[in-house]
Image 1 (tube, one colour):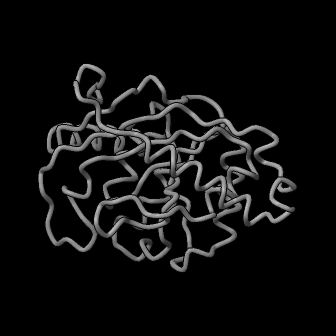
Image 2 (image 1 turned 30 degrees about the vertical axis):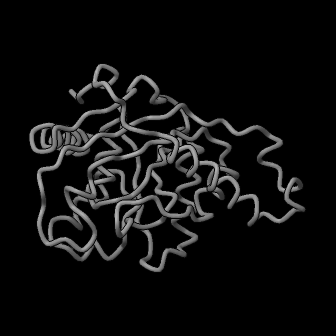
Amino acid sequence: MSFTYYFWYTLSKIAARFFFSFRVVHPERMIEEGPLILASNHQSYFDPPLVGICSKRGVYYLARKTLLQIPLLGKLLPHINVILVDRDGNDMSALKTVIRTVKSGKGVVLFPEGTRSPDGNLQPAKAGIGLVIAKTRAPVQPMRIFGSHDAFPKGAGHISLAPITVVLGEAIRFTDAELDPATYGDHERALYQHLANRVMEAIGALHLPEESSTAESVS
């Protein structure tokens, strides 16, 4: 974890706790070593750092190349583990970088829905995350964010100080049989979509606990 990443990581933790009463449910489930895909629902611009501060190591993120045009932010992104992607979402070079990054033993944050939910509800998964799973065979850490849509929904012009919680699920480790395209008549696209759907189902199965005793605030 570089100094710049550590600085913004720590600042994000403090801001999340102070402004949004941020907490993590089942933090012990997070895989902290080796290749990992951190898969979460997507409700807000807040989501990437919220997912990132659930891990004790520096993880990698995707961000639009157009953000480089924003003063200061454009210079910061390369120093906080950001993988830049074209706006149209079909940037194969970025996808190859994600695969190389995961294979090298790093954690990469991916949002199966592809974009922020307009209403806070879960959206269908896109096949992209399935491709990454198939090519890397890395475990997947399902995570579900609650409250970030209330705090900063898509299209909003202001921020609300709503409480935010992230619930971590048990890691998914796909078997060789599950990753074999032959199971789907050698249709790789069908395999990728199936894997993406499995991850989205795992995210959807996560819920807020009835009692807060199972949660820990990020420290």
